[in-house]
Length: 408
Image (tube, rainbow, N blue to C red; front, side, top):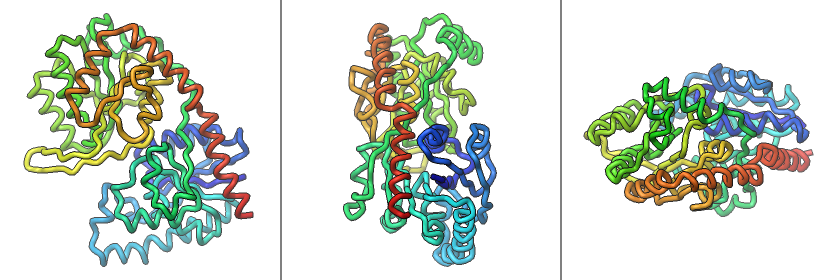
């Protein structure tokens, strides 16, 4: 069976494309030949190709490469022009490629992807699969309805996302957890020494501090501002922690806000903000704890601006990576987190947006090295039993195979 995977974002290497790539590398073992299609060249396409996935580029008009809701911000007249002059011709091109490649099914990795190119599968008379990897309430109701109409099957990465699917379409939905391959990072001593040298923090190498790592992008819904407040509380209570925040993102306003907040809380010697890392697993291998302080929904004031912040997590990949490495997690109770973590068994789960609860969890984890080791070991077992890459690949292959069989 041949499956075409359309990824509308060629240059943002977040959790969604990384999770898909991991699965695609194993799909051939379950009878699926994957072909990834991108609207432009970029780091994501390069990574897929470097990992042995066949890729094709169908150049998209500039308007279809607008992100951060820029397309929705266009006037109605401009949106109509994009629909007629850009979207329809682009879908005709994708449809021709689907037929040329003899793809049996077309997969879309995000709701945006099926909005951009879902019509192509209909034109080519191929069944469609939509992967939902996070909350969908950021989409206007008509757009989310269109996504569900265009999808023949909807794959959810967590049971917590099931309520997002409208009742008339729930028969299309199934849950397939993301999977993760066995990881072989450097040993902890080497990883800590490398990180200590990079940051100029010798106390990290000596183990004087409990190393807390965040691998979250610098965007408000990730809740790093709550982590900073919680860190100040934990340090005031004597917790010997050091926090490293590694992540990408292009929200300069929020990152500048975090830098100011760190200064206001006098945490310059306690929190390092190091930006994007090409090797996040080495940083994670050095960690004693991973923290994911995602918010659910809140208003955040930055200067004169009041931001409406909403969670868009699904099944956080950083938690899976930490579990696979035997690193216990502290995470907020959002989306599928409780499907990953057993509270006090493989990690600590705290209410979202609650810096006090997060501070208590930091203190608890920092004070108990035995618990950290035991929780990390149990987390590795959970990954092997529930979140292996083969389980994820088999699950997706089954969905794609059932679609292809029904269409034949």
